[in-house]
Length: 96
Ligand SMILES: [Zn+2]
Image (cartoon, rainbow, N blue to C red; front, top):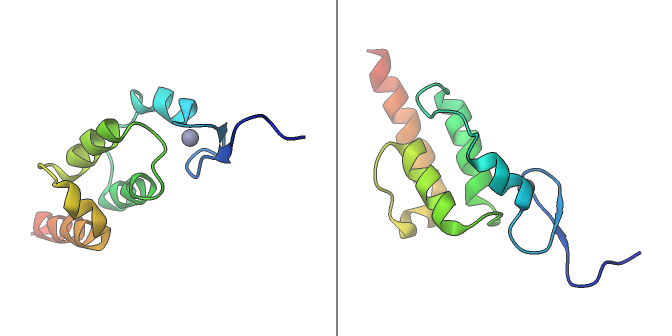
C-alpha cells in the first residue's frame, strides 16, 4: 500500500510524514527546560535536531540556541562536533 505523495519516516519519532513532522512540532512546546537537563541529554537532543530537518527550521534554530545558551550561527550547525565539544567544555568548567 502506498500513500499518495511522498512520505518518509521522521528520524526522531518514527511517524510517517510528508513535510514537517506534526508529532515533533506538537512535542516542541513541551520540550524540557534546558536548565533541567544534563549536558549529555543536551548533546543527544542536538544530534536529533542537527540530523535531517523534521520541523520548521526556525523552531530548530531557536531550540539549538537554548541548548547552547547563546546565539548560534547557521554555519555553526554545519559542524555539530564543535557545538558538542563546547557543551562538554562548559560542563567541565562547571565542575570546578
Ligand atoms: Zn517526528
